[in-house]
Amino acid sequence: MTMVVIDYLAKWGHLLAGITWIGLLYYFNFVQTEYFKEADADARTDAFVKLAPRALWWFRWGAMLTLLTGLMMLLYRHPGWTVDITIGSVMAILMFLNVWLIIWPNQKILIASNEQVKGGGEVLPEAAAAAPKAALASRTNTLFSIPMLYFMGSSAHLPNGSIGGNMTALIIILIIIAAVELNAIFGKPGPIATIKGVITSGFVLWAVLLGLLLIFPAGSPAPAAAPETTVEPAPVVEAAPAMPAEEPPPMMEEAAPTEEAAPAEAPAAMDSTAPEEEAAAEAESAAMDEAAPPPEAAPVVDPDPMG
Ligand code: HEM
Image 1 (cartoon, rainbow, N blue to C red):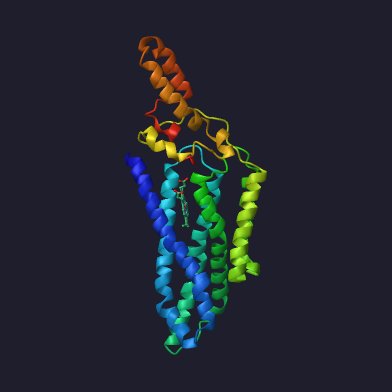
Image 2 (cartoon, rainbow, N blue to C red):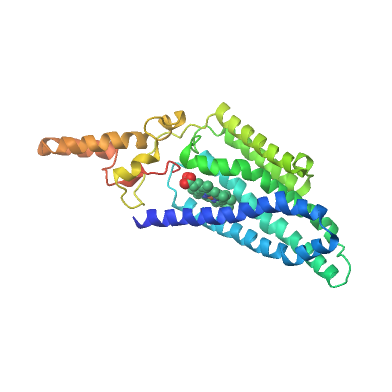
């Protein structure tokens, strides 16, 4: 139970931190930059010195906590890693790096420059180059956030297959993501310069990535031996809602044979032991070893299809 609770607490912290981070990202991109375009010079300088640093503090530490809790959850995963969490995590980790290695260092230059201006001094010469660098990385993060959040959530709720199956789509997707990130470092804003452009591009990127997964389904790797139990026993009742029994996504039918087998096999085995304990004992124990661990062994009915 302890591991399940820790995992859930990490998820709770992850969502709180993620909301803080991405909420401020949207504030910067959709609200603050537009205000700065229209603000009086004095008001703008004042906001840069007094408002932006506060917002950036919550922004970058929100990103840090999101990463740490996300990595914590990744460490708890056992075999059965989905392509979804791979795509979502790769994008989110790049976003984190953009925050700490591009946005924040360049924003520090802008804040210092505005502090100097407020004190009656001159604009720092580096400020002219710092602004577009921070802006492009921030716009790229806004672009990434749309498909990132889809895949982060689809890992547990609408997965597109597992790592180790057909990797064609994932490889193309990772190349596309790398190209977008390279553009964030060396390129130009292009269509993501405007709010409408970045939102539209985010949904286009999402459609392209999901389309690739549908064209080249990832499926699942060949079934491996049932994983060693590392998680505390999870009662069958807790496990049931994990994968909607009525209508599993097509790929899940083949994606997790152990998940399919477990709920059917385990109760049947338990029923059969009751009346003919002695006769069935040996065969049953062999069958259970092969087909599915006893119901106490959580992984076969793990609520989390991600792995
Ligand atoms: C910074 C790197 C990040 C990593 C390594 C990471 C990792 C993870 C992992 C491992 C999970 C669990 C997936 C599962 O249960 O199958 C998860 C879930 C999730 N993450 Fe992230 N994440 C990151 C960033 C973000 C960000 C920025 C957001 C935005 C708010 C976010 C939102 C979510 C959501 C909504 C879920 C789904 C929870 C659920 O379906 O129960 N993550 N993340």
